[in-house]
Image 1 (tube, rainbow, N blue to C red):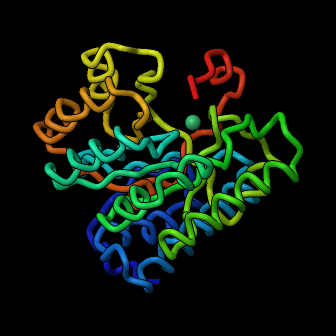
Image 2 (image 1 turned 90 degrees about the vertical axis):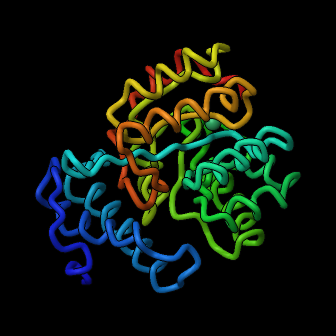
Length: 268
Ligand SMILES: [Zn+2]
């Protein structure tokens, strides 16, 4: 293990079992995006954590945050790509020189292959958000597997890489899905901006920036989200935050409460 590469870092963890995995994960902050060795390290680290989470401490994936002073935020955009709005978001991210993560829907990506390639080529992470956005806990396990594998195959075709992470639509997950996803973790979020419901850019901005970093849930299918993004970025930057992709920052977040997330289903 190349733990020495992150020497001096201290982390707060919720379970001692995760510690060695955390060190490995932090390696990914510095790697060149298309470096094969780094990709393997990142994937192995995520796999280790998912296995620990599932086998050792139940199905809950623990959020692991770096210690105070190492402020990081992972902006995540779900439900795209959108033919017009996603390129506008990519323009903003490029201008601001920051990385983010796009959890794409396969049936949308197939119509916007160049946008997926552009996002990946710019160093953003592409995550799997299923093919048609079903509630995975309400379909058969075979259908869930098909939703994930079909999207994997398309994204692998477009980027040359299978996504490292999966975000279940609506945050709906259970132990069977966690096991199905192995060795990859199912990624939820720390902060829900409710941008799919909120049509006010300032409300989205407020929701995002009141957080202490972490994983911020946004959607690249809403014009208001695009409008809110520059102010969100400016605010985090002014507070000294670093912007990282999901695999760089996170290992997972607490297991979703399906009932909570299903109360108000997102628009897509
Ligand atoms: Zn979604």
